[in-house]
Amino acid sequence: MSSPTFPTIDISPFLNPHTPTPLLLSTATSLSRACSSPGFFYLTNHNIPPELCNRILNLTRTFFLHAPASQKQTLLRRDVGIGNGDGARGYQVIGDNVTEGKRDWHEAVDFYRPVREGEPFSSPLFPSGDDLEGDDGEKDGEEKKRGLKRERAPPYELLMGMNQWPSGWRDTFEIYVREMLVLGEAVVRAMGVALGGGMEGEGRFVGVTGKSWWVMRAIGYPSLKEKGEEGGVSCGAHSDYGCVTLLLSDGTRGALQAWVGDDEGSEKGGEGGGSEDGDGNKGDKGGNEKGGRWVDVDPVEGALVVNIGDMMARWSGGKWKATRHRVVHRGEGFRVSVPFFFEPDWDARVPGGRGEGEVVYGEYLSGKVRGNF
Ligand SMILES: O=C(O)CCC(=O)C(=O)O
Ligand SMILES: [Fe+2]
Image 1 (tube, rainbow, N blue to C red):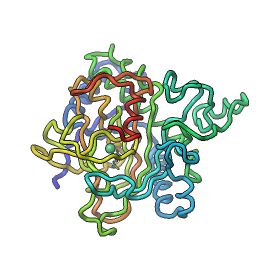
Image 2 (spheres, helix red, strand yellow):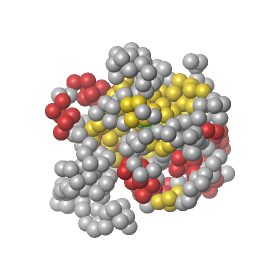
Image 3 (cartoon, rainbow, N blue to C red):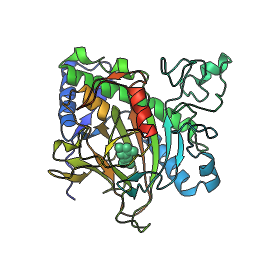
């Protein structure tokens, strides 16, 4: 497969409060070009310390390769109504997801925004608004001081449970989440400028992502070769369905691939046909392979790989693409990646896409996770 020509966006102008306007505008223009086509790009000067990224990847690798089966069993994602299950958070074994009749050859731990007091607002999924968040990294100290912190007890509604942290992960990953939220906000400010045609657009997405219902997946991919699954996929073709995906991965090459070359990668691309995944971050699967090709999106030292999801494609009025991608790891070694999905607020209203009306993001996400779509 030929080398990718994915663009690089230096996001530092949007992280520095003293950046002169012309530089902000030119960054936004480059970003817009990258989001229109190919819909994947490298993000540099993002301010995430390299040591933190390494710690995240090392914790992930060590857990998947060395954690005792009993720990994985304890963290298992469970269905709503079963123990502490919320149908979303927790550990998934290899082969849990099936795409086009083939098992996705990865294991993963999924985390979501902690559920906080009074959130997510008017959702019928969470009518009381009374529960306090027990695993809230951001307000942890403050809540403890005020004597408010307590664990919420199961049973949980769909998506409303507690994050299941492997031992030794929580402190480091919560720092990482905070960094990702700062970065995500900078990226959507730049996107607002890009779509708004000037600096007045900068706040456009801040109001609908300020309480981002983020998702983070820590993923482990054994080589398909080692498992005798050469014909299979590590993660089947899909578009992400939220706003912006910020992907950290190890140095494995030739694994992540993006569909480049036609518009079929956008929201309703392809003929469907993917089966339910329930991963909490996947848009449409399946695909029509005419008129384009799969191109490797190899890791670049110090850069994050970024792509946009279906919700941002909708907000762009179809100008930008939620490019389909997949992972096919047939090389050597065990690959790890940690995508962070910077998503809309639970109650954000997102305009209709092709053939679909407006959606409230939390309801849309619930439908995806429940597998009704
Ligand atoms: O592991 C990767 O490189 C990408 C994973 C992915 O596309 C996803 O989880 O949505
Ligand atoms: Fe994805």
